Length: 314
Image (cartoon, rainbow, N blue to C red; front, side):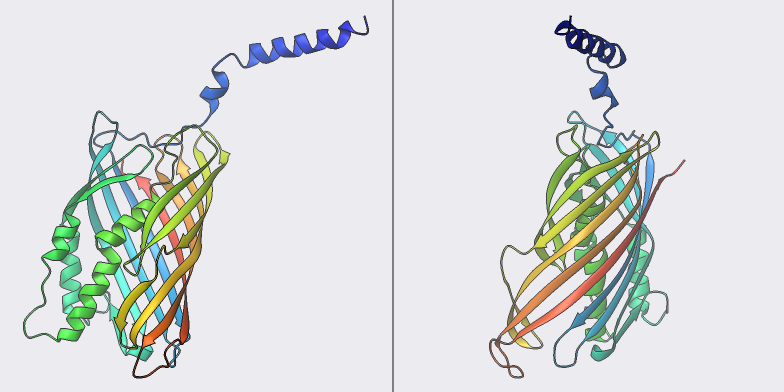
């Protein structure tokens, strides 16, 4: 009897587990880690970006950059691969950049730059299209690049101001910037599920420089209404960047990290809130210059805080 007693307990425990969790029940309880959108659905995404850059150059440059990006996504259709096809529009954009050492002060809310105001108004009237997988992977982007290619300097206006304004707009809202924000804040699900830990490798454009960003995510909490997904990204350039700047001929390397704390709607999978912090180091080495010795290394540090809000338009 002493030998059989543990066997009886094990059998009873197994039977209870079978009754309470029949085959397939555990898998069914796993939260779906993908989007579940319907044609006709409209979603909003608002990204508040505050960025500060400090350079250890001779004049110790300080640059402050701020954007408010509001995006409206309309789900047009799905296809046989279950990819979503969407129409997208910018809305209520804000942009400002302050660089005292460079005598640069750009703000879309001040009204001081008619070119900036007009161009942003034109951008808000445009719509472009994309397709994404159920995991949020960006498959295709059309229309946004065409808009920025049609922008031309206005005759009679200050050429330097126009160059700065158009380049800043492109870096903030152009196709590379949009693609980066999309991949960071919408491609947050695993390609294969279910799983509680996963990795997505993306190409992220930092100041138009393509760098590798490896994002590792974990499902940390699930309720009836929300999923909480946390992540850490490691950012590295796969090569050195060679450039001609005001300092001369230089090469630079990029490295950094980014944290994520997502709350997403369990029904649709759409992000409701995310706070993300990014820290980037750019080390610039002088190759040839009239002002600096060859081989001089100049580091600059950029810290960015993203606050993201999402919702469905009812």
